[in-house]
Image (cartoon, rainbow, N blue to C red; front, side, top):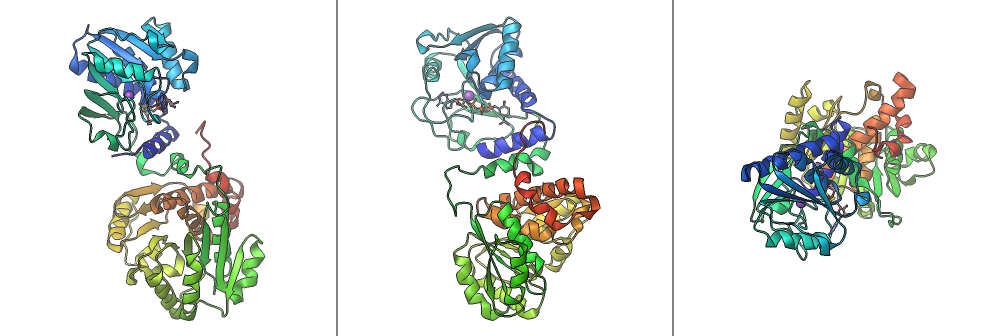
Length: 480
Ligand SMILES: NC(=O)C1=CN([C@@H]2O[C@H](COP(=O)(O)OP(=O)(O)OC[C@H]3O[C@@H](n4cnc5c(N)ncnc54)[C@H](O)[C@@H]3O)[C@@H](O)[C@H]2O)[C@@H](O)CC1
Ligand SMILES: [K+]
């Protein structure tokens, strides 16, 4: 089962893997033509009713695969208003090759004729609201006809996610949907075929640019909408909380506060004036601080717990006390990870161990990434928390769904890149569900590291990633 948003992300990832939409459209149209063939012998009359989006494009391709039928193509609207380049190219191909094509610019002129089969390629996953004209008139004509109605992807007018239809919608006899079932098709009284259109499994498994589309920020948002992050870190290490905090800002958080021992205040403050520092007395985190930290955490959308805390036993006790009371979202990194397997918590955790830390938590690892992915999934299920296990291929799993990230490079083994990743994951956890936040954080941090390595090679520093994060979180869209 795949939602509309996830399908769009997978489609974009497929393009990045070298399988562009136009190729998928060719397979989609071919699959629709095969469904027509199953119900009617060559020579039968087929009416393809095409909208101006990519659903229409699929229908236009289908017409080409039905040369031995008597095919009429109705385009709903003027050709100049076809919305995508690939749909327009397929329309032009039909025109140039002298297919029987008609354009419907006024619903009053729509004449479906008396076909044996109707291909409903008006609207697919792009539908919003009730069918407008001339789609509504065409849908009524399909309902009145005796023809078998084959809907492309989803019956036009039906919401692919919910199955809801406002006003008129097409009542399909058969549906040819692509790649995977759409949740909204379940309650419909139609025969559903899922057609494999050649999307590589890698487009779902590997995090790609399509995953960035979930980040599109509402232009009306105001301060606070993109999240406030509290970094709890510092002690023996001073740079770590500053790196995480800056990464959270660069990954889009509106406000980042760093709670740290007063011994490291100056060091943290020294990195940037954009971080708000909330110091507590002492030189490391101890259990007496936990009540104040819980109160502070309350006002934040996510906490990043761990960077630079060190591994003192009193600190571990404090981390356990914090987690057993906290019930929000926390990215847990570095020395704080050791507490996780022994702590009952209502918090939603994103644990970001490297492979050594994973072993320390009781998990297992393997050199081959496929085996590692299985082991990580099993351990995440046991643990009951989301894991982002860092490595040449990062593995993200909640035990149920497992994603793999391939960005990043060997120069990123330098100290501090993990702090950057944790901070980015914290910021993204404010706006995305944890599995997506972790996947996108790993992808963008690796991508920032790849951009930095182009200039810095093996001399790359964790700080080189920071100002490259914003671009790494943006889809370059064309040309990938
Ligand atoms: N991976 C994918 O996502 C693939 C998608 N393909 C096809 O592309 C379709 C989605 O294409 P699009 O995103 O272009 O969207 P559609 O073709 O479903 O809709 C196109 C346009 O119709 C207009 N519209 C929306 N609601 C309307 C309404 N109520 N009445 C009248 N017009 C309305 C909108 O301007 C919308 O952009 C899928 O359903 C599928 O058929 C396939 O070609 C191949 C792969
Ligand atoms: K359709």
